[in-house]
Image 1 (cartoon, rainbow, N blue to C red):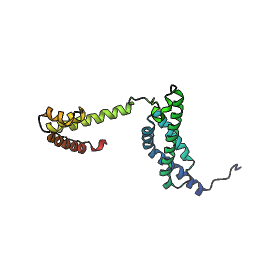
Image 2 (spheres, rainbow, N blue to C red; image 1 turned 135 degrees about the vertical axis):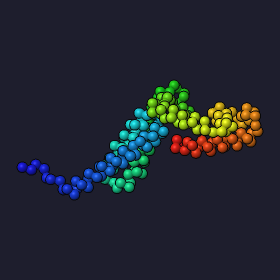
Image 3 (spheres, one colour; image 1 turned 90 degrees about the horizontal axis):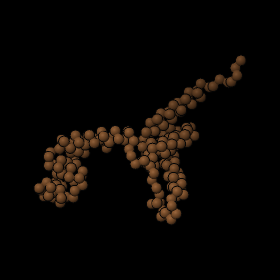
Image 4 (spheres, rainbow, N blue to C red; image 1 turned 90 degrees about the vertical axis):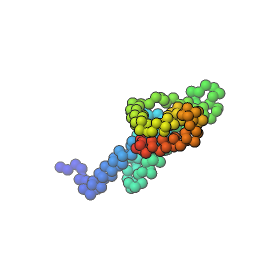
Amino acid sequence: MLVTTPLDPAWEAAATPAWASLDAFLAEVGPRAFRFAEAGLRHREDALDTVQDAMMKMLAYRERPSNEWTPLFWSILRRRIIDVQRRARFRLRWLLPAGEGAHGEDASIDWADPTAGPAQTHEQHEVYARLVEGLRGLPARQREAFTLRVLEELDVATTARAMGCSEGSVKTHLSRARQALNSRLEDVR
């Protein structure tokens, strides 16, 4: 005895690819959405929650044509990020001592953990190693100019005195060093 009516094979075939393609879309956009949310919220857990909320909200629009999914998802995510920021700002106002909340948005407290996570630390070590390798490949004068001006943050005049050359030479060496490093580290950006 048949309890339910059999599904129309054409309808079932049409419904399955929509779910599969939406899953593929969300899987593809997920990492970029997380980075976008983390940049806006500056808190990993809030970013994960916000992206998950946006993906859940996107399920309500799965019947829309797939060419509309990209702008729709990003607008949903952007609005969710703004909502989370507003809620956090509102909650923090109640925690501020009296009189400090009247200074507007500048008075908000950022309690996000400023330390990098393990993945960020690993990536920073890799980038640093690539930078050191790139610096070693530079001619000595370019390496000196880059190190003193960029890494040590000396002004042009002080760098020129330290290198025993003119300020124009420092600028030339620095420009050439930056060009060389940009070409060598192009994939790091």
